[in-house]
Image (cartoon, rainbow, N blue to C red; front, top):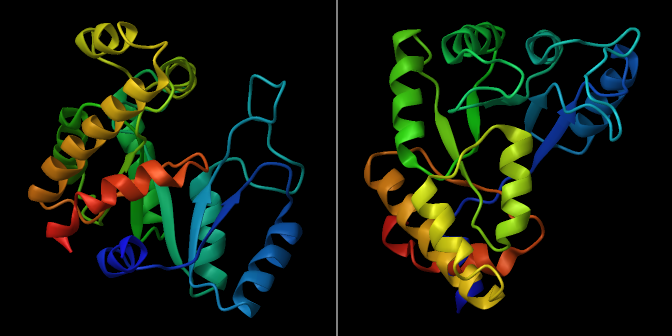
Length: 229
């Protein structure tokens, strides 16, 4: 059945997401202790976005300002496998991609074991990013982050917030059908399948899906990727 196929296709591991937002070091320490007690082995260490209604991230008193500081804290005190974020088109707060990769290098050097990318819709961004990262001796696994387009207006809002881009040709294609949600959904799934196939054929270490709690679309994509199991 589909569920059985999916379980065979992907490894299911628990990964806690931990941000610097609103927490001092002692609170983060308590969270990590709790995760350790629950036998959680993987932590995605993020700076985090500003709280809703605020335009700029502000360091919590006694907390961390950057993700590399959180990574160092975890690495020096615990044995978690640590993931972190990276941005194939550059971080929305950093206008220079080369500078952004220098920032990433500091984060990786602090003890990151693997990276997960921000969402993107053109695989060229991922492959170009890998080339730039490898020139900086960033050689840990970089897992591409894929979000299937299921609601075109919603995706436009997301891309504006996170700095990802949609090609003009892709915008035009989705604008033509944006009021037909089923057509948008199928086109979005088809595009995500195409992305995943190319990524996996070119030895991407896996795929991270941004599901937004709409898992059926992701299951449909995975069903088409069984050949890579």
